Amino acid sequence: MTCVRGEVPEDCPHFANGAAPAETEDPAEHDAGSGRQLRFPWTGNAMGPADLPYLAGASKLKLLTLAGASDAGKTTLLAAFYLLIARGIRPAGVEFAGSVTLEGWENIAGSLRWTSTSGPTFPSHTSSGSGRHPGMLHLALDTPQSRCELVAADAPGEWFSYWASNQASPQGEGARWLAERADVFLVIADSQALAGPDRGQARVALSNLLRRVGAEAAGRPIALVWTKCDVVAPAEMEVRIKEAAQRSLGHFQEFRVSMLPPQGEEARNRGQGIVELLQWILAAKPTAVPPEAHGDPSRALFQTFGAFA
Picture 1 (tube, rainbow, N blue to C red):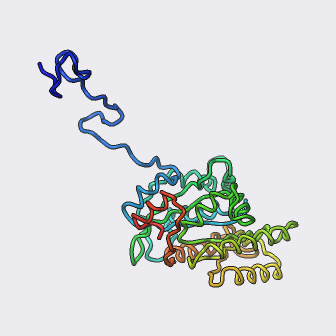
Picture 2 (cartoon, rainbow, N blue to C red):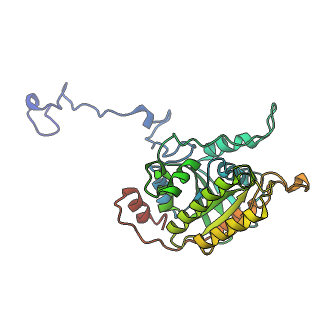
Picture 3 (cartoon, helix red, strand yellow):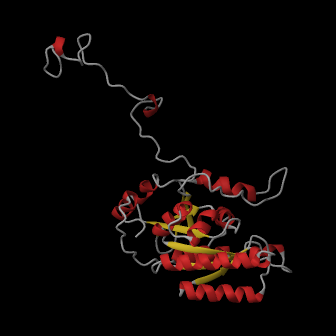
């Protein structure tokens, strides 16, 4: 038998036992039946930057960035979105249409559920030592106008603290990455921290963050979100924060949310403001952000597919 490549058999490194060797195949690429199958591009857990082009290639994404200090309630707010949607509590006309990160959602929302041995607790702190990029959670939601592919970033508060103090801080790289790509910003104001013994430090930190977001937003929609509103912050403190937001952000929306009912109100009023905030997020339309010449290949890929304008 001659070599399939036309070589003299003795001189051909691919010739063996009268036939060309079979190609090496990965058993994981085949199922028990027949036919070749592709590997899934996701695991169900939170996504990273390398996973996003899979979604961006099919439709335009809306990247939601929650900027706030550590323990301000960012992860709890994301978990509340998911749990309310799962229970059918959502804005009028909005329907759940799928997610590729259901396990990731369950990881942050599981602690808020009742179990046979314990009641709900708050999600664990998002660690700042897990990498330089945030975990991102996906929800596909059908609205009366169109489908929204919402991607929400669950990022550590420490990143935003470093970034607010120094835009070029190496420790704030994750926050900087998000600020460059976000379509919608939520700046989180922790009512409990602003009413506590360290409220002066909390106010300064939030004012710094408002200035940084205002400098980076470039016209993209921003909401000031007061979390833990079952705790009432001093009226003077709220006035100062609103003045700082007006100076730094210009135009912004304001929401008050809490997993617990306000003091003196019935338990049926749990989850105040969360559905209204989600409705605003879905409707918010960011203005185009000029492309930046920083040579980031992931940013260029997003622009190619029309995700993260």
